[in-house]
Length: 461
Image (cartoon, rainbow, N blue to C red; front, side, top):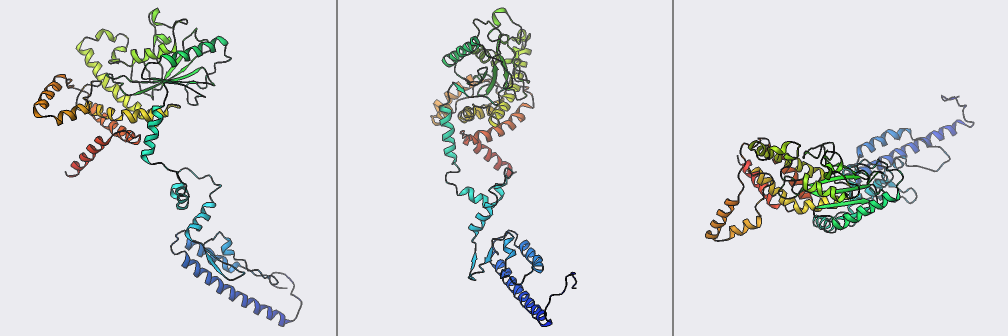
């Protein structure tokens, strides 16, 4: 028996010797063939850095373990069956074929067709990048994106219906089985909103959830809320209109008004969240959702929200009260800027086009106001029109002097003893807003040029 425990094969010793010679000849031929293949693979993949050294090592390691069985005329190339597409031999006709880099990358890309890669992995895989670039019309130019934003913004309706709200504050609040009278009253509310909505208020209602409504109010000029977007989610309970709607404010964790809490609560007599005179409370026969929105726009987002706090109105004419109101406006504007960033980065559902288009259109004015306030002017004061400034610079000295005198007469007084943290905090917000507005296509060239100039000056010192 041999070392493996098998009995010796029947036959003469010469036959065994002949078999041994043939095995030695096959082994020598196989080693020579493998050496040639290794040489060809190294030559053809000199410019391809995808693990060639690892593949060669695997070849060397697997070579000694290859076995042949007599009686079979098969010489499988285990090296190439081990996922090596760099080069291979055609055993039938002896010709050689080498994949070019494009075919090689395509074969590798095919391996990933059915894999769920983590986000961002594609950006680091060259052959996947190439596949993406070959898709016609995959990416849009910046001008095309800006044009699309402007088009959607111009066609954005003040009132419209949508299917549902997946991110609505009251999505999980059930209204139960709707009564016919309830549904009829909601439809009446929709009709009023569509017909009588004032400027700067936009509303969306749900077809599948008639109890849900979302509104945005654009901050009025002359207030610390100017150009901001303030979102509200409303829910009509089953008892409506016997009881008022429930409203939640998208605060982002900020309280920028005595009536708008950080938790989202809207404090208003009309909503029953604050005591008031009988004429200020909800009247089922007369009060409407339109009235609620107008009250928030006119009574809450006003010029001096400090005096919205109950009992503070008595100090409205005192120096201390006016001083506190100005400080409150400074803080309110900082919070308003943070709310802008919050809306830009996480726009509420169905208002994405409005958010992008609004800040594309008003971005320049908001940045100009930030600069104006950082110079020391009161928040909410009117920012000089840039077109007027350009015209004055182009006029003669006489007209320019008279215009300058007139401007100085109407120029608001500088704030003194302002909180020291206001300017540095606003500078940080300014930089963030500049970046976000620039992405949306706002006219920020003036501010970017000034920023570059300041950086060059700083680098010289």
